[in-house]
Image (cartoon, rainbow, N blue to C red; front, side, top):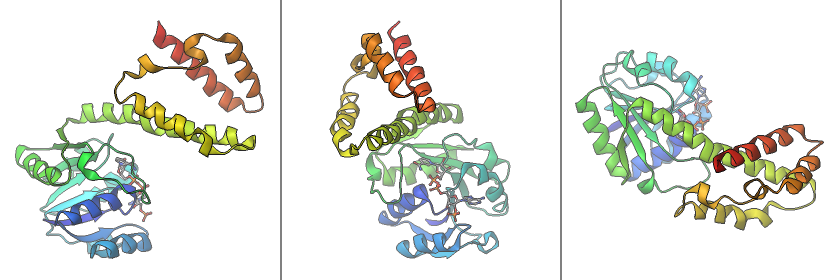
Length: 254
Ligand SMILES: NC(=O)c1ccc[n+]([C@@H]2O[C@H](COP(=O)([O-])OP(=O)(O)OC[C@H]3O[C@@H](n4cnc5c(N)ncnc54)[C@H](OP(=O)(O)O)[C@@H]3O)[C@@H](O)[C@H]2O)c1
């Protein structure tokens, strides 16, 4: 399959490598920053470019993997292509593409990607959607080449999945950032908390999260909760987060 990749960020980088490893032919990488386009392109033997008018019009597949808010405007530049055009976004409607191009789809990988961290695509859930059965069949075949977990999911379900992913991944990671801030401000290193983070994630592999919740909120240890809140007096944003999450934990007990 001749593929044009629009985007050179976290997802585009991992997708490019996974597709290349399965023998797919990624011929061009577009990105507004030419250095970013070229530095990904060179790793997969593609052409790097930052001009949408130079995009090959006869590719089989166009994968738009850029900032969500820019997908629509980039899709407009693909109006006259005959290939299938997909995006990789959790919350962006397929109609943003199908209103511009004849053959539209979604190729959403449910994982957290960072350029510098290797991932194995085989176990990453790939959520696909298309504007007709024949496009869906093409995406199914391609997705099955790189992952054992392919899901046909409509846009509404995909958005729900993305919302849940923000809680499970993005917010959890942000809480690690805040934990690190508290540790650092008091001369402690993030290293000491890593076994706790690993065990917390490991426990929910075989248990419902609400069944393995620990800590002062679930025990209703009011003295400890109040001590923690007073330790955060100089950091009102963290104090708010602490209070909101503790209240939320208490609510799940009811
Ligand atoms: N990261 C994840 O874990 C993850 C997981 C699943 C799905 N997704 C989805 O995958 C897509 C890409 O996410 P990402 O995390 O890979 O993003 P990212 O690493 O932040 O990269 C963003 C890309 O968008 C390009 N871009 C920024 N503004 C643009 C514009 N106005 N016009 C055209 N291109 C523009 C950037 O180009 P330059 O660098 O050249 O400026 C870069 O290639 C998004 O739809 C996201 O929702 C992300």
